[in-house]
Length: 385
Ligand SMILES: Cc1cc2nc3c(=O)[nH]c(=O)nc-3n(C[C@H](O)[C@H](O)[C@H](O)COP(=O)(O)OP(=O)(O)OC[C@H]3O[C@@H](n4cnc5c(N)ncnc54)[C@H](O)[C@@H]3O)c2cc1C
Image (cartoon, rainbow, N blue to C red):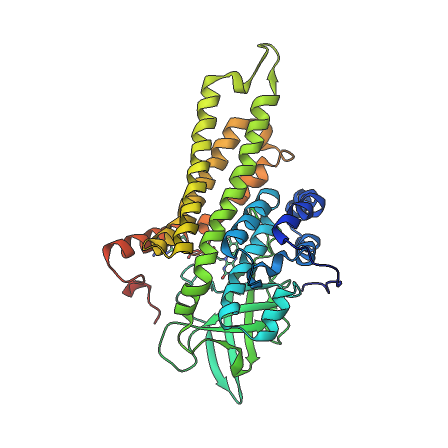
């Protein structure tokens, strides 16, 4: 749970305050978070105090573009912290549109960390087809489900939760579930290849009771709501996440190429044309991703006709680029980077997460093709029972 935040003056510009929090808390803790798998609590609390967690709640803030800058910079320092904040922003977007006023106020004040609980053990990465149920239970509603991954599990204060509808037709209904609700269990610590501190554990709901007012939007309308509110920020911020990891990898490559010497030749790696060509290919990949993300934000900001297509593409573009760039940087930096300590191997592992997070690259490619071919986004084979 988010610790009680001591009242202190909020930074006037949370994005500007971010650099200090990264330098003082998040970067120094990043290797330890990776090594132990501990949730980056100190960094998350420092971000809350700096106003960063309330960024999407502030009416005068730059919105998604600012959030993308935040996630990119965090991802360069600590992938686990960046993923926690990314999920918080995606869940906040749903709650800003449909959530209770007191939860929105607490998020704006930096006192409430939230996350998405969509993926299930049954329907796996097909988050659009929950198999978990919502059933009438006296004056309330009973939720039962096995969620397969929930970032910040046991650490967030509240979950945006999907289930099959209570009574209405449709694929999904969304709920707001406070983390302390009886019947919710976090099924063990997260032990992953990368993002080791992001606490993406499975969560089980066994007879969780919520009031009918916990429903977000209308019964059966949850998928449209998730696609309209959570998906755009999630996809854009996932791209920003990949970009941040790639930039940090490129910094490591530049450092390695210019500083380490072949003493017997009196040269650096940067003196070698083959190494420079390999570096340039990676640089072009990173800069191409940055241009794609900027174009996506412009398309969204100006309501361009191709905004939906760009949004569906951007996470796949960035996630695949991140995996390629991580592999290329590891090769360029050699065996030294294969060891712990340079930060390259940690970022290599972190870079691989985005493409397997739903919607995965495969799902996004299918959505892009369907949109372009005039087909419905979800085919019959993807519909739930
Ligand atoms: C670090 C991390 C954090 C996460 N945090 C959250 C979170 O906070 N909230 C949340 O709800 N979920 C979260 N997830 C879950 C994530 O969004 C995915 O649901 C999960 O990674 C899917 O894994 P799976 O093994 O169930 O994949 P599967 O669904 O079993 O898929 C395995 C592979 O098959 C491919 N595949 C599946 N269906 C098709 C198809 N029809 N055609 C072609 N290929 C297909 C997939 O693309 C994937 O490559 C997180 C996952 C990770 C790794």
